[in-house]
Amino acid sequence: MFVYYCKKCKRDSSTQVCEYCGTPLAASPQNTRFKWRHIRTPLGDTPTLLEAVKLLVLTEVSLLLLVFLGELIFSPDKRAAVTMFATSGILPSALIFGFAGIALVCLALALQGREELHFVLDNRGAHVQTWIKPSRIKCFARFVPYETYNIAVDPEGNQRMLISETHILWSDVCRMEIRRHACRIDLYRPASFRFMSVYPDRQELEAIENYTKSKLQKLVKR
Image (cartoon, rainbow, N blue to C red; front, side, top):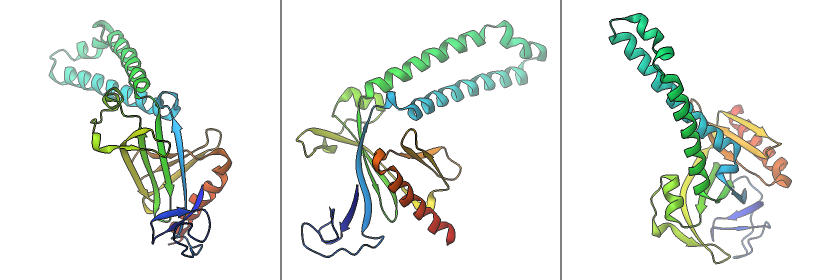
């Protein structure tokens, strides 16, 4: 939701007068921001699943290419290196390992369970914190340590654990893609894959889209 940030008490307010200390908050870019929570399941998130499979396929293709180049360079019979993939059975084995790897990826994503994403879009950039229900299995599936000092209690009284924080400045955003059907905004940095995905509530998608575009347009003018 759209809020006003009070620098004095470091809290958000829904009005231009701080609800906690009574300080008037001017509607300036420095004091306004969007803040919301999004709950998702990584296994049900298509971009997350596709990127995991893409990484697995790229790794396997790279290994096959290295094997082929090694055979081509060091083998005395260059023709054998060319026909190696057709006669040695390496391609069917790679296919089997590929499907096994995809199954393991799906299992790991399923074990990760639900995650709670806390988004903030302010004058400087986009920020997200990822929280999960404390569990050693979920941490193992995410390759993150189980750290008890990162466990906190949410407003409903449930325990949650902070596992990651991601920040990107508007000056570092080189491209933005809006997926209205999926209700998602993807932010990209130069020479990198999708760096951050923002999941607005559907009723606020247009407002957040306009807010993000305004930040990027100002940077272009500079």
